[in-house]
Image 1 (cartoon, rainbow, N blue to C red):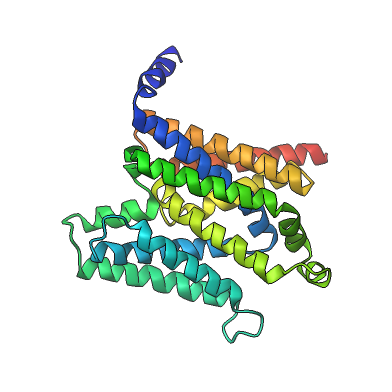
Image 2 (cartoon, rainbow, N blue to C red):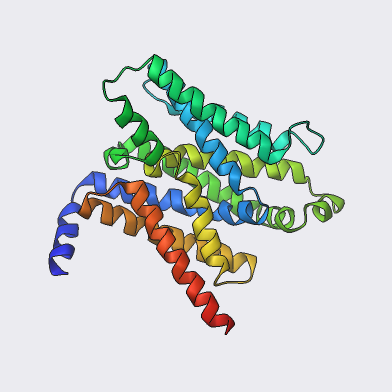
Length: 281
């Protein structure tokens, strides 16, 4: 135990470890705040679909040799989020089918483009690291950190300012519309914020594991808490703790960052399920 603490003390002297912790905490916090709303509104699959869109956009950015992939990936992901939410109930291709089409299509096209226009001799390694996360979280620059801080602060402020509206839209969208709340506008706002979080989180857990950051903390907290506010607070705490623990274990053990964080969240979920069962009895 003493050796582990000493090793961590040495690692924390390096800026890249501090950057990874800061970004991990911020992304986990933001994803957990909106995650509860997505789970309750049965929008969980949107996160997974948009993550695949982000992968396809990243492939296009790679083909175009863009130095800053976010400049292309972020607008495309946000645009797809807007399209999915604004389609309405009368669309010929409904909800889950539209998300599935977009998800699979973007994933396939992205992989096809990487194969045809590959600029790397290690295509399998590049694709695997993009899908499941890589060590890029440990090679963040100060600019990357500040961009993450900026978007995270914006996300938190939006959530706090529109908390009451998000609450009403989450639990009874029809009643919210009847009382004058522009439910479609707030659904759109939620989707755009989730799209931003997904793009930021790709370096942390990879495009295939992003939805885990949204879903697991929310489901875990629902096993322990009953009110909307307490579920959100508990979800934020669990998400941040799992991310920090996952990053530290990854640094010490040399395991993939994204997979380690998700594994920690799965363990916490089962613990919360057991605690919930005990409380019921």
